[in-house]
Image (cartoon, rainbow, N blue to C red):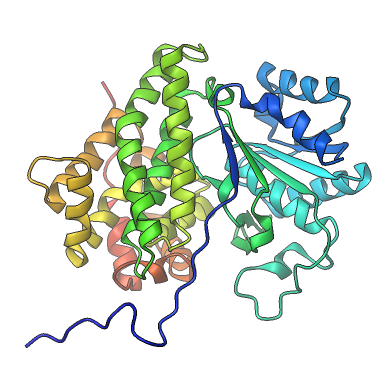
Length: 407
């Protein structure tokens, strides 16, 4: 006779919950920001963004509006690619020189992650990597920090509602997670108009990143019903709105039609929900994606998308009931794990993402290095089933494929 599962509420079982920060959502809501900062007496403002976004007219207008409101604004835009420590160092110097009182991190995940740890390092001693998550001798995060505003321009990482940043070592490319509750921005401006000009490929890659967060959070072992509920609703939003957003990006790039704004806005919400949900944990897919970014310099969202098929097929054998729930949430015919896996494969084709590692110019010679990095990654311990080195080898090999020409 099978043993009964222990009661969740048995004496001695205590669980902690966290819920993210204040969010202002809506088309044009960025116009509220100058008033918020001035009401708090925050005049010296540093904008942290990436080189690409800094060159766009929408950013220049945003910067101009802050200055026109009487704020003392400087911009640090020395961010590109996957964020590295040298970018944080340069940004911290800029923040100190300006006497920054409020830091606005605006852009994709890289700008948001770098902005948050610039705020940390303004007044905290030592090296950035001293504050690595899990370091038992990490210095306390107890010094003054500027008021942090997170403004996403992509619907992907959800870093604007996260309490961590991922930054790589410039030389080794090792990814380091910096975590502390004080990294959570005090205010999020979720304005879909700022993401209207996102190109199709980046729309797809960041969207599949958001989906991976949601799925892995729902599958992660542990007890967190709030995260589970948020993850399921986020999966439903992504299923509906990501293909629509992608089509707008292809056919209607940058145009502020009501339909385009609606689609971008719903994907912003889905991405925030993914980041809110994955405080429960992530899994093997992210460990593989982190390895691909480290070893092959692959975009994080693209890497997540490539690995989804193999990693989810592996997990479906261990927790089929979870896959059934996701299939039911999406009202897929049959409501079985296989239906969900087929839906993921179909979505990737709709988004015209690289389907295999070969499509992304990653060959079998890199597998040993990929396994080395993935095995040490912090995400797979919360995977619903334990992952061994042999499992990683099988997953990377299963994802190799052959590069195919698209019609």
